[in-house]
Length: 326
Image (cartoon, rainbow, N blue to C red):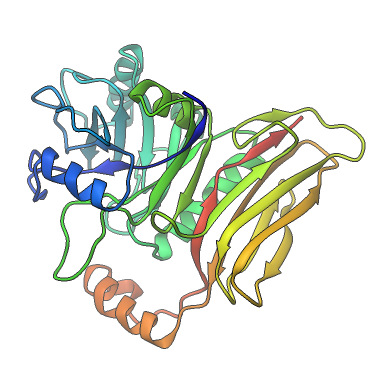
């Protein structure tokens, strides 16, 4: 099979989690209706009990979420990823994480700046394989996490990112399973190829399937790659389906290096000069409407009282991984 972009949810819960509502089969059917290509099942503190079912049209991948007071960690790609989830200290977490890695798992730090369940242990980028930079529908905590990710990039960590809907169930008329989705540029839709693409940083995050999509290339190099710097080098930032009045922000090692507000909806390409070692990544933002702010305060305010009535900055609508330059 040839390389292509596959959409997926790398953080989702079934009835094996106490707060999950659906069986794995039901989750797969919901995902297919939403044109999602893969799911990584990440139930709380438990390995997948049975073999994952084979369901035509969707790839199911083994995973688990180590859910502890000190932080939440997704462990992907192995059925029996650890023998015990007992973990109270950072050193115990590292021992479990290292055992999961020895068994072939990828390790993802989940929603580290969440107000309700943050990462309370040391935030060390070198101890993880992937960062969940966007958790659940976009909210303020994800903006803080994005700033932390940029800091790690400036410190020299080539840290892949994903967005996970952290889906447990819907509420009344919602359809949250794919908000957000992570697209991965993979050789095939096999679990091995999808996880390999994530590990290599070949990811971009969308508000949902078919929404604004950001890609960054440099000649034949793509997101996650490292490019050797040469005279006159430029990278191309491509934004498909950009919405009117949304703003593109491009970042490098010095901070925000390019900004563009779309006066009309459409597809846009921008050539960004690259003059020194570092990275490029990008996201688009939108200003919250009064209706959006009202709904945000109604929902988030009930879950995070400290953010109720808070004046919110522009929210991220689409977000790329990074490409690197040396």
